[in-house]
Length: 394
Image (cartoon, rainbow, N blue to C red):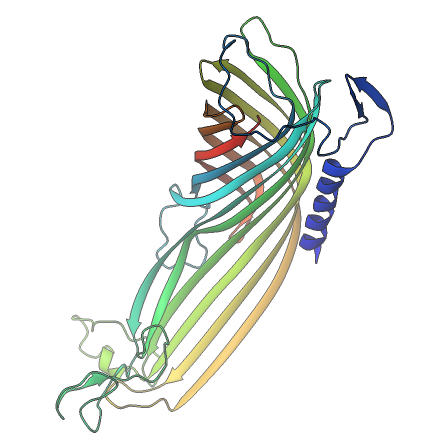
């Protein structure tokens, strides 16, 4: 499969980035700092991460060196597909946004010569927003011989719902018609080379970055339809036509049709990015901003499935289906597109101990074009929201 191979390759690159030793040496004090990479103990850490903050010279801000780690919890809202759900009979507006959540983790280091690396991953699960409609089938209500029927209880004259496992969620003879509104999963990996520039006259420190980025977005779409017909195959409306006495009524239904259509649109994106992080210390707060721009190739695949179930059963209590036919159709398609986009992060980190900070911020992530959502191959993916997390030695 294409996705596991790409993820395995990125994992190997990340491990090599973090643990490989170098060939060319430069002397920084008592240790040898060499090549582009370093060992985990290269910076002589004292591991006193929770030591109290030393604010004797609080006005003199010195950026941290060595290894750093960040963890953030994301609370997001994701824009709906522009064209809505192609299978929905009554689709919700496509200009809304729905809630999701995720995590973001970063690991990296900065050397004394102001060169560094970092690898980060972002995962967003959701939104998973659907609307459902439960419809009764022709023979949903059955009459039990003993009057107890399926767990309902009562006397011999009481009709009770039949527990015939037609629908394991409700235990009754009905269909759940579910239409997707906004359902996605997203994950991304980055590997970046960073440079730290000197502090400018306004107290800001700039860190340009250049790296590679892999993203995977899966958009799930689903729609269901339920129809009734009389013995001649004519549609039976939910209520009779008051202007036509001869029109079919609900009691004339003898054939019912259930159509379920669903699909998954996979987006595998790989490309390069460049960006900039700038920050400054103000009292116990570290205020930072990050901006990224990326261009990627998107290998799209879409899998669609249709299930059509036709049952001949008359309306009434105790009726059993005479015949039932099922037809399942599965189709695959693929495409290749160009994707561009950007990401912004604005954060404020409060110093708790010498190396530990708590932070919160706002972030926006936008893949502006070339994203497959539903049956549309050229949609966008826009998500924004807040993050809360912890930072160690950054």
